[in-house]
Length: 389
Image 1 (cartoon, rainbow, N blue to C red):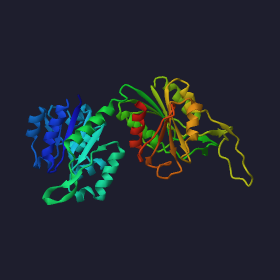
Image 2: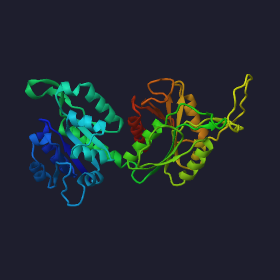
Image 3: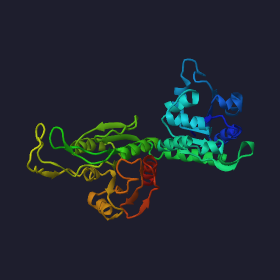
Image 4: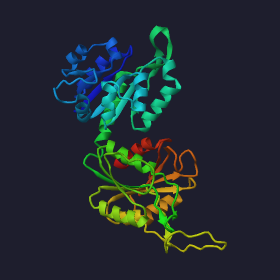
């Protein structure tokens, strides 16, 4: 049984939200409803309070329990935020972080899984602003139940009709099920590049942005895990609920990761660790001269191999300039990994610094599977589900 907050926005499809609430309750969930101002033009709070036996929120400053801020309480108590029907207005507010009513304020305070089922005129659904908003929400791991094509109001036809209630309930069940995949598990993630100092102002590094590591951290949190990230230098923001330890060099990353690995159930090495570092770091700044300078390099520690020796289920990454999987397969054996995720960084659509990715997951037993080409967060959710299964 889960606690579900059902957000209902202004749409002629509001009438179906009553049946949706009842269907969710039949599935064993507790349902509490929040109406936007526009939704009240179609349905009333009394309808949902009678159906669910729970208070129905409307205004941003409502307090069913005196002295308690309802938008915070409901956000923290909910296992799922489901918005159906979701209007174009609310979709764009959610994407932009606007919180000007009870539903959007609650959504901004909410940190769990979210499902939205849009319903609107086909022209509104196909508008660039709506498409951009939905793309933004999808990248934040919001599951979108797309509307169907059919007859809508005033005799028009097109894609914009609220999906079937059975499909929405199934999406909610899928998200709630995934939330428990890593419940009680501790996941350790290495992420981003390392920087190996040449002198006090220069260093050896690579183009890793840390976006994939951050996406894996967010996906693991959504699946119920406790997450620790050992993060190399980057501008990427990591989820607030993750424990993030910032490091600079490969040796620092190994030291912190080895210490954190003791409590971890799984280790995912998404960091792009520099393979070599200068033998000597010059003091100050090496000045320009008209002669060649030669750097002597020494190998850095193999962090993911060292972590795999600790006996944890360890998953590595292989960023390769081709789709040839031979090197990735060799790494599984050489490093003692449970699995490895190969991605072709020569493809600009999924390479370094991009917002999308596509992985080939190879297990130690030789089986392999290719992810969809999607946002890094969606790919991270796919990756963690495959590993869990």
